[in-house]
Image 1 (cartoon, protein in one colour):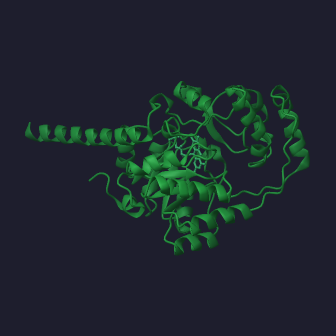
Image 2 (tube, protein in one colour):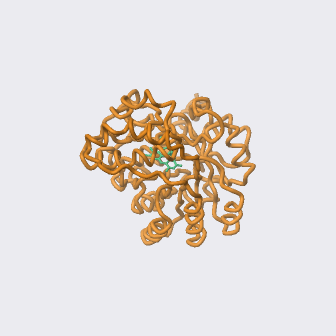
Image 3 (cartoon, rainbow, N blue to C red):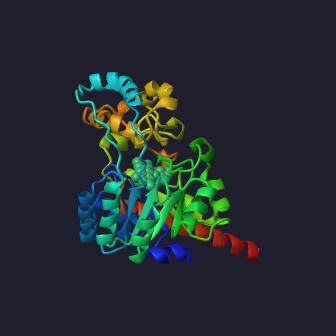
Length: 366
Ligand SMILES: Cc1cc2nc3c(=O)[nH]c(=O)nc-3n(C[C@H](O)[C@H](O)[C@H](O)COP(=O)(O)O)c2cc1C
């Protein structure tokens, strides 16, 4: 059967389809549970959540489903805060703050890894079935903690080298994020520009070099994409954008509308919102800020500085100043229940397999 492999077995799921953990309120417990109930792996995007919010969301998911699910976290980055750099960035953001009547300038505090440690503790204490990480490699002590609880660990990579590093460090499987992907790049070695490899090239080269199951991510939103990824050697797919427009998604309404109405040539990869490159819909904020792209404070400092602007822009219905993350597949996205999307993906894969079977038997008979 197309859907039975090491990945589905390890994760305890029926279909090798993972709904990407999307931080920032997209992945409501309802979305996660709907995907898991439909036989995939729903994932809570918990990168920006406090430990207590994560615990509460996990408990809510468990009230909605008894199926396996995942929690996604960010490996913390702790750059030094350079005051002159922060002041310069605030100067560049002033006109947006003024237009939105934001009087408060956020304070940037020394970033500590203590919160991350507490987030991990919640995953261990709640004994979640699986967890995934992006932006780097999980420190050894946490790997040990999660392994002891038999929690499946999924890393993220954007090059074959990064996939190998994930494997060497004990990840059970790895998401290969192609350049088509919406949201932040997971690149953690070298320049991101050199790690903009399309999913089609990334998957076969990776499966030839690592032994752990490979998960394809980026530009997949229907059964054609799922089957193609499996043919290339992936054992599963991770889908973000197509679930972002689902009914259960907690994404801001304007963001959802923009994705539903955008096209593949209206997107770009930009660091202006957070200091880390991410793919989203091109808008006025990006156009005005991209001249500063090469000298922005690093992630997550720029993220903190633009936070108020992004959330106030959402409140004031100004999508032109919001971060509108989106993969290169917006034309295939629909507003529909997540369970219906799962059902459609599975049916489309099965129809394609059946068609290929009929074609080959008619060739054989002919
Ligand atoms: C709105 C949005 C938020 C995302 N947030 C996260 C995140 O918090 N953690 C993560 O590992 N990946 C995140 N991603 C990236 C996904 O894991 C995945 O690589 C991507 O969605 C796959 O491409 P697709 O959007 O074309 O399906 C996000 C993607 C989107 C679209």
